[in-house]
Length: 123
Image 1 (cartoon, helix red, strand yellow):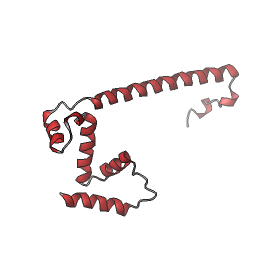
Image 2: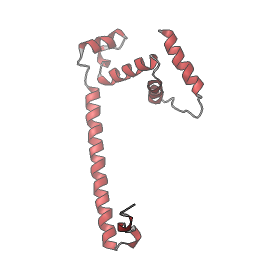
Image 3: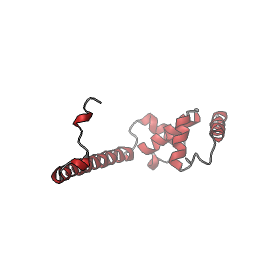
Image 4: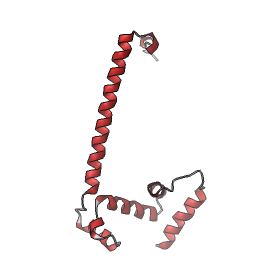
């Protein structure tokens, strides 16, 4: 690296420099945590809203979802399930992750392929 000679190891810095760097790092970490929490709150709000597109709402209703359950979270999971049924392997893995069956150490890839084939045969 061309600027490697400009780097000063942390243990060779003065006590005041170490405190200043640690303080700046703590402040930046707190700001990043707050920003991430805010984004998570925004996502939760948007996902909890009812489905506004009538065609998508009707699609959920035809699938048997009760009207009070037709929110954006359900719409996302429903779309994920449809993709998995179409043979989208990442969608199958994400669905398994959502329901807590993502332990790949006990399941071999053959079982996953059988699951996908089962979805495709049902169509």
